Image 1 (cartoon, rainbow, N blue to C red):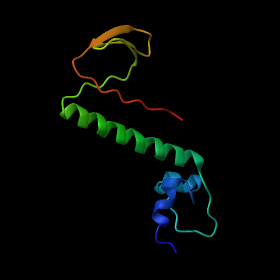
Image 2 (image 1 turned 120 degrees about the vertical axis):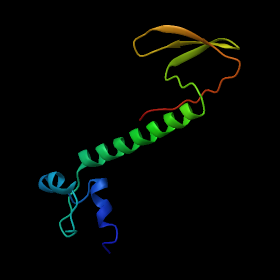
Image 3 (image 1 turned 45 degrees about the vertical axis):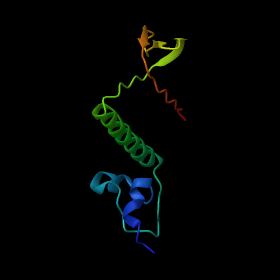
Image 4 (image 1 turned 90 degrees about the vertical axis):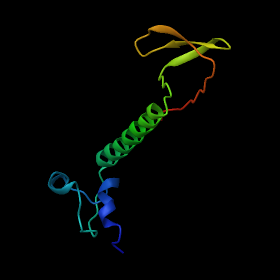
Length: 104
């Protein structure tokens, strides 16, 4: 019905190379819709980056220490951590919350 045609470019629908540069892929022509996986992927990644930034700001405001590291317990109050470069460190705590996630 055309009510959501303005959202289509964010999902990579109905875009042409010209319209991507001209107006972020927005098109009113729904008869010859095209799809851009690159635009869809970029918009999803940008949305996730924005969410992650907001989450980090919220944690910082609540004085929560955020560590994006691989870790294993050494004892009940200590975790051995490894960063992306392979640097090993330990973190000692009285209270700890571990939130695990995955990547596609």
